Every structure is written in structure tokens, then in C-alpha cells.
Length: 153
Image 1 (cartoon, rainbow, N blue to C red):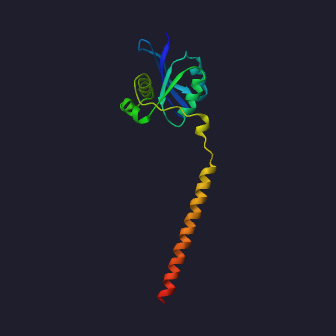
Image 2 (tube, rainbow, N blue to C red; image 1 turned 90 degrees about the vertical axis):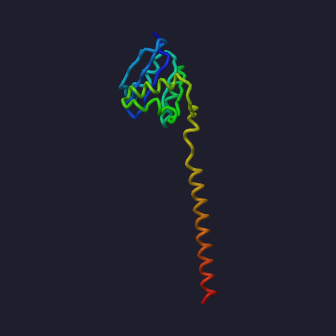
Image 3 (tube, rainbow, N blue to C red; image 1 turned 90 degrees about the horizontal axis):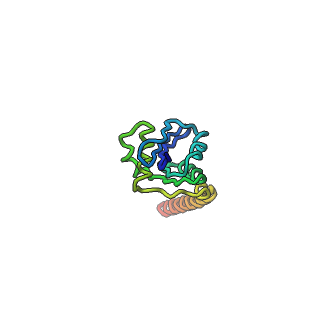
């Protein structure tokens, strides 16, 4: 049978997968997949819909999975929490991701690789400008303070 929907619980080193076919029965249950094996396992699957929680690494994995013809649907964490509320084990969270990928839900658009890596230069420029404004305000306050003291005496 062909797998139509796959739910993936993303983590740092060990991932969990749960896939179902057209009948709704589990076709693929992998409670433990190492990071090095995840991409080759997903590449070996026929094109299907993959649901996962939209965390920081989800956009990277989504771009990787799309290269193999999969439709990836990152789910907003707030929209996913009711599905995962009663499931503490990893496969249960995968089933929650899977239901979210198959059901109408709030999805997050996949960020491009260029959008994910902003240059640190604008932050330092803004910080330098704010530092200059802060120092000018401090000097102005000191001048006002010293001027008011000289007139009183």
C-alpha cells in the first residue's frame, strides 16, 4: 500500500515517524530514526503529504523533503497543541502531526533559505545608532543639570 500522509516529530538527534495509507491504518511506524537516516528514509518514500510542527528546524527539513516531491505542511504550534495535549509519547505526537497534516488547520508557509539567514550587520548598525542617541541624551541631561546648579548658587 502507498503511504499518503506522514507525521514527523522533529528533535535534535532522534526523530519519530508515523505514516498512514488510504485505509487510515498505519503503514510506517518508526519511533526512532537518527538524524543521518531521516533524509534517506523520506527519500525512499513515494511522494506524500508530510505534517510536522513548525519549529526552527522545520523549514530546513521542509526544503529538503520538497526536493523529493513531497508536499510538506508545517503546522503552527498553537494550532497543533490540542491534537498533542493528551499524547506524551513520541509516536503519539507524530500521530498528532499526522492528523494536523491531513485535516484543515492553520499552516505556516515554508521560509526560503535566504530569508532564514539575515545579516547581523543591520543589528549592529541599529545598536550603534541607539548607543549614539543614548549618549547624546545623557550629555544633554548632564548639561541641563549643571546649568541649573550654577544659577542656584
